[in-house]
Image (cartoon, rainbow over all chains, first blue to last red; front, side, top):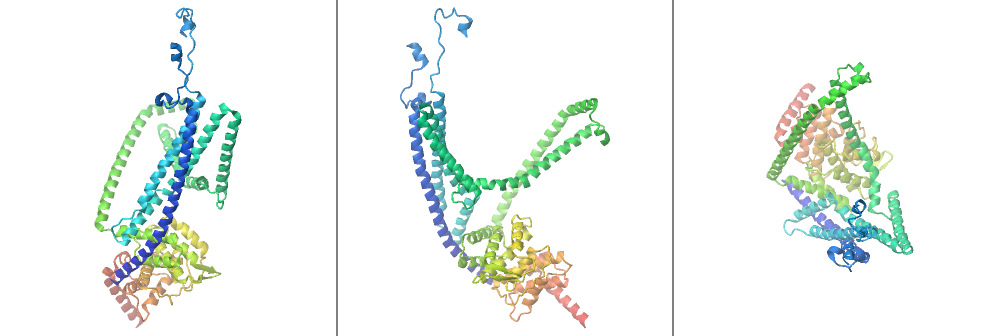
Length: 84
Length: 505
């Protein structure tokens, strides 16, 4: 019985120390990853905007324009020229 | 083609060939690369958002339960983060972005090349410079681990030799063995088909015989294929049945584990928490109570093997070897003693429960490098016991001094129990009924003290003496609950003592 009580006592002491250590560790862990992810998201924002801008610029003759009709019309098709 | 075959169909008009009116091929290539770049960066943004959610979930603490349960829950989540390579996933995000950037540079270079070569050269130059710089950084990081320009690629490349070594030592021999056995089977089957003796097998060059053998072999093929198919189906059925059995047994085990209570799971989490805190903290005030708590777990149920390495690392920090003597570093005596006790308990426990554990050879090698065979352990008798266990293949003659070793009751109980187990297992391999002198001196020292140790320690001391006297001490008396068998032991010991007394008179 004494053994069990002593074990519980040691266990409680150990977990008290564990809690303090874990709190400190988790704070650092969260901060580090949060900062990393924020940096990634900021960089992704720049990369996406510049990539999309270049894509719009290049897409004067986009392969998707026939479906999306987002860009200015390209040169008339052969059929249109034939009809003309 | 129609015009070529019959040019009267079109009258006087010469039809013109239809022209490709879509975007030029270069533009398609550029757009494909740009879309790939965009997709990579959008995907990394998606992962980053998920990462934020995962982190929030990790930080979320259950508001119910005791402080111990909350700590164990947190440890469980942290173990999951390590087991599921969370850090690697997070590290892959910058890699994806770098890849997206490279694709953007390539696409821009390709696009500008058709428009203006001079402008394109500038972009190509900058992109190439970036690629060269990154390559240099990766190479530098790979070659020198102390280089500050470390990247995930450098770590991957540094690990390649280890992976190759693992393949060379573990995977390749297995494959070769399988191929060898398959080839041997094939040769054996072929020989069975050919009515030759072993000597005539070499005279296979005769083409008629070769053709007859081959024709026989080909004729046997459908039957062999059918046999193989049958074997395959049977093996698959067996595998399915085995899988079903395993699932059933795991469900049954889970239920029985639930029925047994949470003790084992709790013990496993305790062990993981201890291991984590020993790895994380370098403070003596944290490590010492942690090691003391470790000695409180008498049977080390659900033991985490990493604990062994942690204990050894602490021991190395606390104990130094000076010629033939071992001594504790100043101010680290208590920690050195606790770590040596834990090393002894953990190593001995693991060598009994899982002698093939991967960690054991590494620890043995490191220990032997740090502590040669003939050493004087002075005030660290538990380290001397660890020495006895780790040098199990050799006779250790180093002296042991139990005088002055007065641990707390819990530590004493755990050490005594381990020593009695060690005595029993050693008495099986040594001369029958003889225990190592270090173990016997432990029993004699503590049983002959004025202030007797706890009853459990007395039991272990009696067991050690009984083993040394050659009494019939069964395995379950050592490893199971001793209280059930102790009356048998006391009877045996009493008989032994009476017999010895009669002999003396």
